[in-house]
Length: 230
Image 1: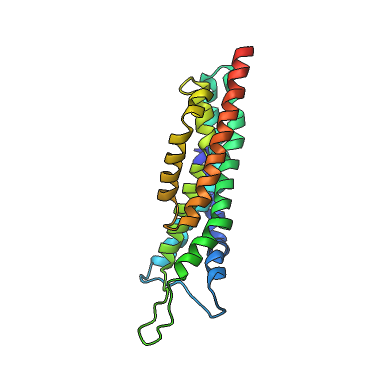
Image 2 (image 1 turned 30 degrees about the horizontal axis):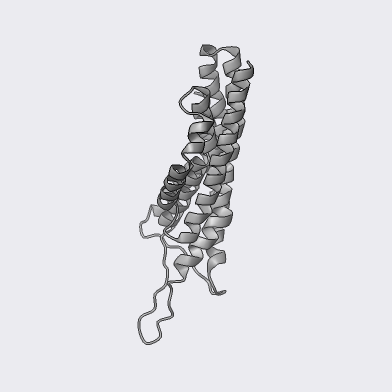
């Protein structure tokens, strides 16, 4: 119930500032246009703009409520865990949101400008033919933005997943090190699915994910060393 109330409060705050949030998310697109002419996003249904703001408010409301939701989830699990296990879980409650927001920031500040410029490069003035101009629907644009942000945030949970697997014995630093070549292949495939269809965006996600994979190997080694000492 506390998580639901936190989500409802986050939704209310987000909806109040939904116009500002929309302007923030549309800024990379506006900055990607090659000229100073006015451009616009359109909606083709009477309720489309309203429902888009509702979805956007739920999206950002979940971000605002996530610390409360994560803490409530921890409090639900804590009575069934030993004291050392509770100490292990607490750092993940801090690291996981930080990694998520880092991935979201990478998408917003690095991927979006490159991807939007790539897509806008297909606009033409027409010449002797018919011009090609972007008339994007606001719901489609914001859905794509939210999809990419969530995808990047979840992809950046890689160290959390791998270190948790190492703690419970499902993997080891040696196994991860031996599997580097396969990990690179999987990372490239995942990046191709999660990013817009341009090479720069895919590289922009692949490199950070590989670095996070190497960090995961280092963290797993530290975990194994502590287990050996204990």
